[in-house]
Image (tube, rainbow, N blue to C red; front, side, top):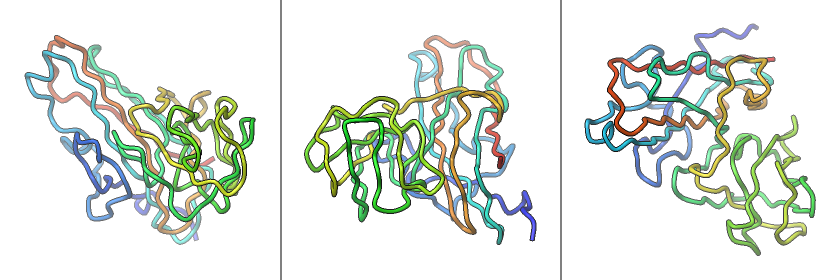
Length: 233
């Protein structure tokens, strides 16, 4: 069987708002229709335009094909045409919320005094590139480090810098609030900052955090748009 684009669906997250709990798991009851008005972000109010505002939304790609969709990449295919607004993106696991740290259930992790963290089971749909994690058995989020990549089997996390908190095996871990993620603006699937989201078996979902910044005293723009691209590699 082949991968068909019609079966690569986009969905909103469980909580879709400007609240701290914005984000969480995929909401398969809330599909995103490409090209639809306000399909990811609501209209910016006049007050927000004047003061400037930063909004976050988590979107999911779900593979509803029978075959696996492997080595998924995500980038910003077209950024906003308004010069006073901009989109950046980060990977998004199934747990992260906009303003809250969220404990990772079930899994345990081995933290070393290096950039390597090893999970007890595949974690690539739970946490993602660009998010921050820390050993929550012993440390606070001050020890959190950014995830640079996750191995193809989902067991090995490579951090952007060496973990300086408490090391050891069998540790609980927590994913930090998305406002502290590392957001990037890759412009193609071949860009150095393209998001590597891993493999999606049938009915599996992986997320992307989208950050929308409106500059203070922006002039206003009708139908400000952007496009997120996905492909396999």
